[in-house]
Length: 443
Image (cartoon, rainbow, N blue to C red):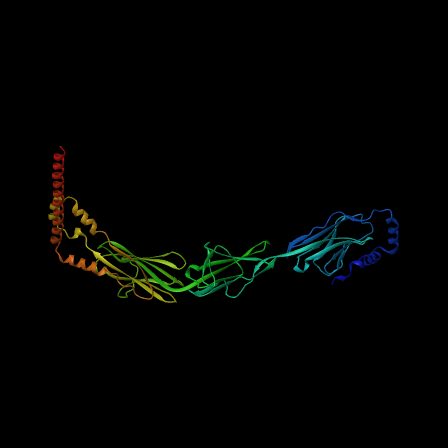
């Protein structure tokens, strides 16, 4: 323990210790010569020190004309004597003193603790007594305390989530929150008014009526201008049942062509996705079917089924299915096939009429080779999607057309094209007659 004393008794204690160290006779001899020596003084002012906990700190005291006097180090807060001249008087093993030359004394503190902060005094046992002081401030870098829950929070959609980040340090650290992906943080007040902020300040971040858009990683950052700053990563997972969006409910194409079925799945936790026929048969990837999954974000996936229309057996309903621990959902897409005109026309007779009506047959052929998609944005949830209106009528029309023979189909196209040509010639004739009469009237 340090020796307790008051400033008024320092001089007498120092004098007593000085007598023990040098002897009474030597002390009288020096006193006789003191009249001819200048009084001691400080050569420079001690500087205040700020140091990070765990590092070393040193105070330097420069004394001129020390003569027979001695220099002592005192902790002014508790009036404890730490050292005198070049000897340490406390049992603190982390303290040491160094007298490097005739004028310089250094007090060195290793592995500074928070309890070492305070005012330190360099004192000379002269008459009158001289002293100067300097303060030691010990700062502590920020630290984030570990709490239960770890780095992941699971919450159902619509619930409340509370992210906590308890910190310590000196000075008291400042705590801020950011989203790892750089997006704004959505804050809802008691009235559920939504506010978006890039940074939120405070140890606790609360989400009311959380939605899937708030899902992601959040960073808690603590800083107090004492390096290094520290951060903690917390992942927020919002759970909800799968929701399927089907934009094209009706997809068709000529036999022998390739078509693509597409749907969007939103689900958390990660679902199991697959394709099936309307009969319930699960589709397995092979030469006929090719499947593709594209991650859009943490909870959205685009599903694609590429298939080849080989025969009429490929027509019908195809289901896009998704299932997770919360629930399941499916959406239905209806596929139909058309026949190419080239497969129906007799080549000999077709070429004779090509010379008569020009390029009209090519136009019809291009139209028949184009696959048809009826686009309707539909959301499916916990149920099977229904076939959109128009799908059955489209297939009914196709069936009626298929009743006709190839020759009848060809003749219908030729008759329609011939009527159009005759109508166009009549129109040109009438324009010419009207123009002739107008010219005669003007003349």
